Image 1: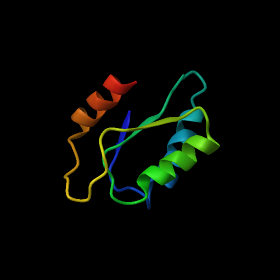
Image 2: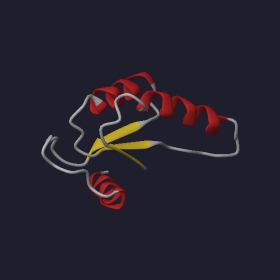
Image 3: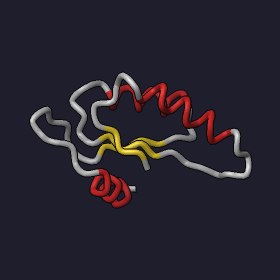
Length: 85
């Protein structure tokens, strides 16, 4: 489970590098779940595009997007995503 907050500029590269690294370990079974934590940038749009082009991945929004809110700590973001799945 990967929390995302205002990562539009780096999330695609991070995703590609992570998937490439994991695929070098064929003995691993994996699922990537990205959790958008109220980003005020285009992070959610990038995650949706990644999900559309790579159907084996999932994304979630842990709460309404608001530029005035601070991001939640990663543990609370993971908890919110776990409850909604």
